[in-house]
Length: 436
Image 1 (tube, helix red, strand yellow):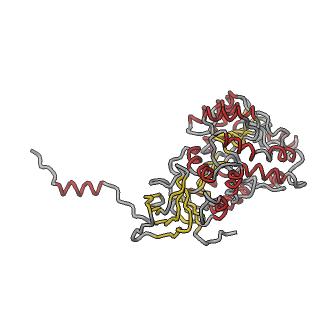
Image 2 (tube, one colour):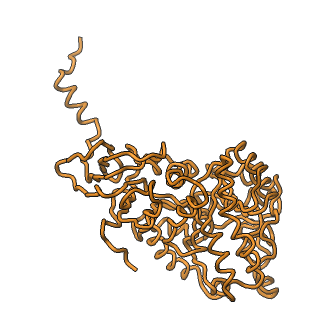
Image 3 (cartoon, one colour):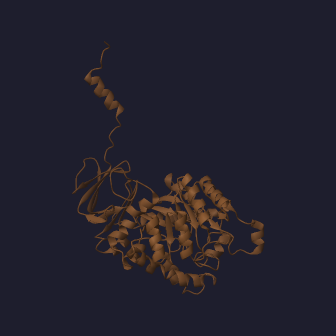
């Protein structure tokens, strides 16, 4: 019989083959912890972090020899917040429309670096950027550690129809339009199911993480209608089916009811804005499992700026006044109807870094604070299709935001972010003022 290895040899071999245990790097002593899965506050917890991920969450405040201890006993710890609708390459101003003729992509790219850092320091450790070509490079720079910013799921160029909300030639004169030529699927403008398929494949080639279509007119585009449907159901289905081939989910900008209906029946994952939803659309969204990303902040911002002479062009101003003011009421009715809701602001319309104000508007419209926090954590991670963010559980990214006090009792606490950790790296420590 052949010689059998001894028990000692087997034990040594097994130890060599097993991965080495990762030592705990940090321990967060949290006064409270928000359980985003069940939308409830837990009492004192310790979050153990190892190699950028959550090693464990334990009751009480435990001591781990050799680990850095961060005292958050006067704070509520939450999963890093997720904003599902941002535009990190730009920020609204009265000069926004003329800047498109003067600025180069590099100018927008440099601006985006500051906007990304502001967003991270405000507590948003993950975002879905729904339109902006330079953000694909910003995402890569963040991932490489070259600049500070949140985790970015980037759409790149939004997909529109001719004259639609994301047609890049809207508002330019005939001479410039002739020089540029009519935009097509490469530029994100489609007019058939074949075009739609090609546009998605181009986004794959560009390196996008998600697909965004503009299913209706929009408020800020240089075009008359803010709510007319701009895709057929067949075109939407072509986008969705092709996107599925590449593992993409599709977000649909939509204000008008008919455009929403077509987008939902075409299979999109989310409806953004949703201004003119009614009971029929609520039922349709629940039947199809379509998420609603409300962007109340953007609606209130544009309605306010519509009152400022010269802030918007004359073609845009009436749309901003009429549509923007309605979104918060729509949100309240959608929540009461049981529509699945996830957090999104459309930041870039308003100033980056003010994203958390959306929580206040959600609660003001009738959503309980715990549900609003869940919308920006567990629900938003579900929309992204990610099992690495949105919950403080073992194995997830160590993305943590903390605020003084109890945001479930007083949602205003979200405006006092005092601690931000992303992937185990502390970007904002208690008492530290962010850079201007």
